[in-house]
Length: 99
Image 1 (tube, rainbow, N blue to C red):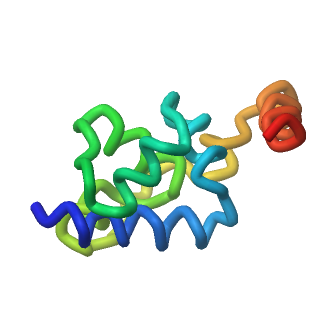
Image 2: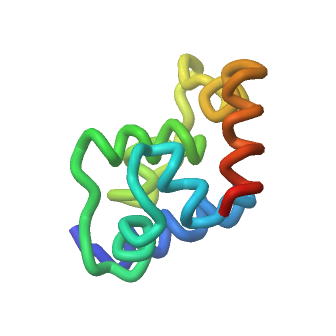
């Protein structure tokens, strides 16, 4: 696996969702510095984090590893994952205000 290519795919997917590195980090239980390391190819995500990234960014794991993005019918839409309910929406809004 080429960490630079995977990092670029993470960055492209994050930007397409209009998320900052800090916001994405928050959503996958990490920090913005970790996301920066991933996007710059300095680190590879663990399998657990790769699955979280794929869910939050509405991509398949294959997209990040092989650049194949065929969505299966049972993949949940981004809105249901990132903003599951009003409480989570408020938390994300608060997070954006703090940062």
